Image (cartoon, rainbow, N blue to C red):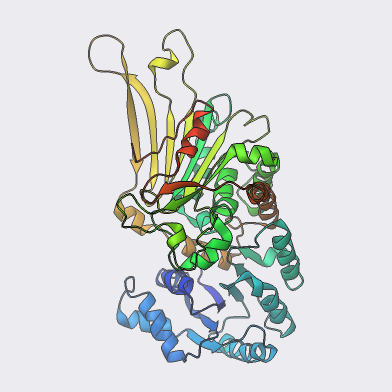
Length: 488
């Protein structure tokens, strides 16, 4: 293991759900594994009037299920301090600076600071401006800013937000977090492709028929209804998670696995996406919204608290992306994501073309399919054709499985844990860069504009199903069907 990192974390939104569910447990795991030891501290900030003691109790409670012992949890929590803070009040930043400088000396941190903005993006510019003007940014160590999504609501708002932040920080100091990029199996995409010549040699339109990406969620909007009704699945899932996965699946091999080379190849893919006209957007994308379940026990989206009775906000999106370059021309990339579906599952299906030779005709064989399970199951399966046992040369489908056991998955670092460690190390490879964010916003903006101009209702689907039938029809038009369909 490398030498332990030194850093002061200042978390804006320290009393929030994300901090308690993800950030504090992830920092603790790094502490337990020795990636940080005694030379670190955390300042949590928010509007609430909390004491250090109460804050430390909250931190201990958040790691209760993973702590080595109560004593170890208490020892860890002593590094946490709380500062009630109004992000618009300049004097509060002066108080925050005094605390930060004091903790820097106490824990011998050396001026290394990570500012984690787990708040509404409307405050990002105000916070970063004050961090610079009130000299919380140090000269003696590194200064890095982790930004949570949503990063804007469209291209124009995201550009304005980016420009505002860049007035205070350099672009290489910004870490736009997309937790999907921290998932073990998402990071495994590059290894599976480029470390296996037999795979990469057929990873193109000569052999692949289509690509399918499914991010299915069993839960609904929960306590996020007010935010979600202004966002929808297109902005909440397609613009970030899905587009990042698409770029990793279809990029060319980078010269190396460093940040700049990976970003360069991802951007080539993003630049090759076919820009959709309003008419093409209507034809290539389906928006859906869940209704009350068939048994009447699960409420529909429009029945959720803080959702308008006539809301057209999509809780489901399915679409077809076309990449216009030599490698992928003619290979549709089908994507879908939705809430209140049959089960929680994230997976990728790479569907290969059927054989076309005199020995085995396509109609007698099954397509070869590589499936990558991103979560909660993790692993890779491969579907092939083999001879059926018995007389003759009849064919049946076989499946080679490499699914990780529950114990192995539990040992795998959590996404936020890996991404926070990358930030500590100064590695931006698995973070979204501005060029990628801008390109993906421009793509989804065309779809959003088409939907805003349309008077049609979303395609409705009962909660607990796999989504609207219109999503099946999207593939059927091309003679394809969804590989993953738990309703069948």
